[in-house]
Image (cartoon, rainbow, N blue to C red; front, side, top):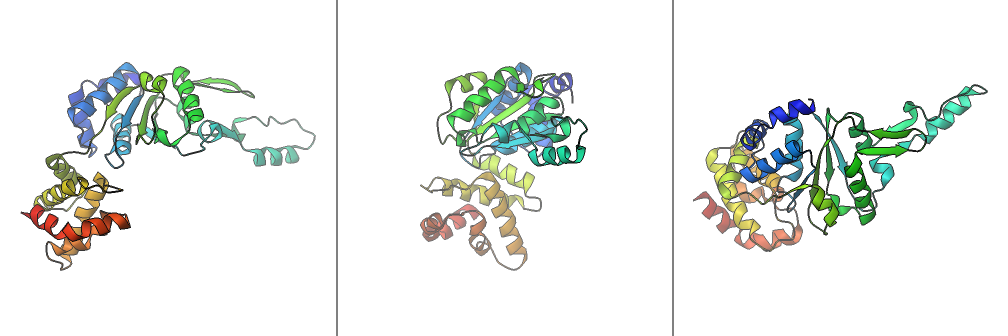
Length: 293
């Protein structure tokens, strides 16, 4: 999809929300507006929020609505330019030199270049969406490198010269806010903070993504998860875990486990920390009973 096509798809925040819903992602007005502005202004979109609120899924849905491939750069402590930009395949270069013998060979040909996510997007900006996932897990040096990339959308390869994007790529960054990002990076982006959905919206998400889950089950799961998240847990369950819980409980119920036993037996797909399980176990029965109404 070309840049002009992307602008046409992003005709309004309402159009964005409708297209996202068709991709099974429910976005509220504020998120749809942030995506709309990022596309129309040609700015990166920075999505922050707690783990599990749907930041990465939002990026996947944006790529789908634009008909583009999602190129994901997963950040981690110690990530460097070689993992983000490009690397030379030294083994292939050495083999090529040996096989060439006395003949000349260009060891900096494309076939020896390993394109990492940033270079992949520069080469085909109208076919790809760049997701820089969990930028807060990287260090300040990598954040500075990314800021430079976002400023010019180009990469200088000493052996090849400068590669520039023909058009400005669509870039989405996510952060769990484990550390503060540089102000310079924030200023460059359209910003949105994603919160956990309320019970009604979460029930709609569960029904949209869980397949064969009944509406009453989805609403019960949403109500129970809302109360569970309100507890001081080390790892509160995300939306994906709520969907999995609804699916798992439904499977158990169809296999003969009555409500609410099916919910209690499936708790391991919702809570995935031993201390959290111990903390919630004494009240789980009551929470489920009240959620079922």
